[in-house]
Amino acid sequence: MSQASLTERVSPCSVRGFVHSCVSSEFDREGFGEGEYRYFAEPFPEAVTGLKRALYPRLLPVARDWWTRLGRETPWPDSLREWLAMCHAAGQAKSTPILLKYRAGDWNALHRDLYGDLVFPLQAVINLNDPGVDHTGGEFLLYEQRPRAQSRATATLIPHGHGLVFTTRDRPVESRRGWSAAPVRHGVSVIRSGQRFTLALVFHDAA
Ligand SMILES: [Fe+2]
Image (cartoon, rainbow, N blue to C red; front, side, top):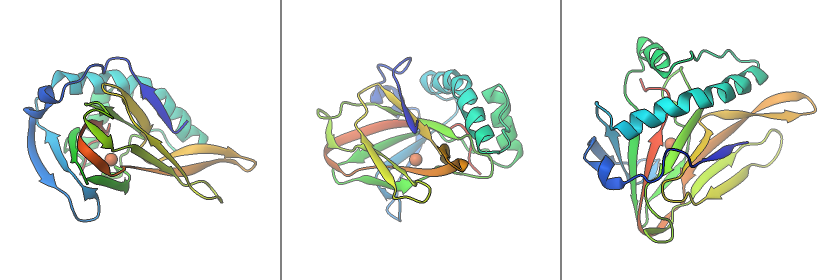
């Protein structure tokens, strides 16, 4: 599994309900594609806090299982509050929930959201408007580097109010030699028309 659909708890989400909760925005044209992103300010909207709190304990067993298969330490405590306290103590104190807005012609380069040594290996993206109606293009992209093989790409149009869980860093892949890590990057294909809004939830904070 490199991705999983998420339909509970997130439908319907509204763009209007989120935009006024954001504090900053900037365009990024230096290597990461083109689009606008806004970080949420404290206090976060209930939908953001609630989603993170609801998702963390559900994703935690997967994270622990994956890292155990890969022979890695699993530093994540049972509660999101404790995990974020660990991030802050390690100098990763900046909040990471963001609202992303893409207009026609915008895109997001393939990347990984690693903001320091502490990483939670799963994250979620929630689509806030309607593909095919509010925008065309703008598929969510996953690009998995397979061990000793060509890479594999997946493109997904996420329905309005639905979310997608995917790996932030890499995932375990079984082979005859045992488990190995397959690095995964994500991005967004070029928006052909309209506007695309998404909410991105990363479970570690940033340095
Ligand atoms: Fe990202």
